[in-house]
Structure formats: C-alpha cells, structure tokens
Image (cartoon, rainbow, N blue to C red):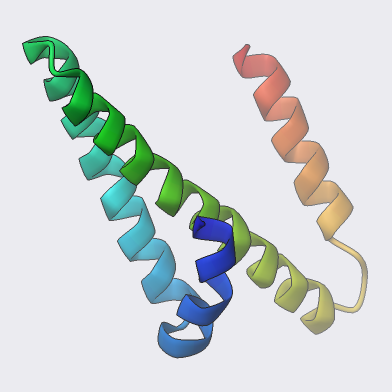
Length: 94
C-alpha cells in the first residue's frame, strides 16, 4: 500500500516532505511496537507493524524516484554504484 500511495504523495507534496514524514512515522511506529511488546498487547503490535510497513514502502518508492532524478541529472550512471554500496553495507551488517 505504501508503494502504491508513494506516487500520489510525491506528486502532491514532493519527495523531501514525503521522506521526512515517512521516516517520522516509521520511527514512531517502531516505538509503538516496542511498547506493545512490553505490555503484551498483540493487537497494538499488529497495528503498529502495519503502520511500520506503510512508510517503509513509501520510502522505497521515493528513493527510486530520487535515484531516477539523479540518473537523469548526471552525465554518467551512478545508480549501479549506489546499489552496490547498499548491497555491500547490507552484507557487512549481517
């Protein structure tokens, strides 16, 4: 749902505002997941995890939009370097 809503949100509010709001919601929902786990409330955890997934999908969409803009604005291809850096960082973090 977050990916599908991402296009409309970016068109209406711009990539920067959507990213900032999505990261804020992501952090807040993670906090609610933690609280829900501490008090043992499964419904609260499930709702918070749903609210965690929505901005995560939106952020994924926005990062791809921004990568496309970067690719168009630069004279040489930079996206493979960005993807490679992400993959190496993810591999090192495991």
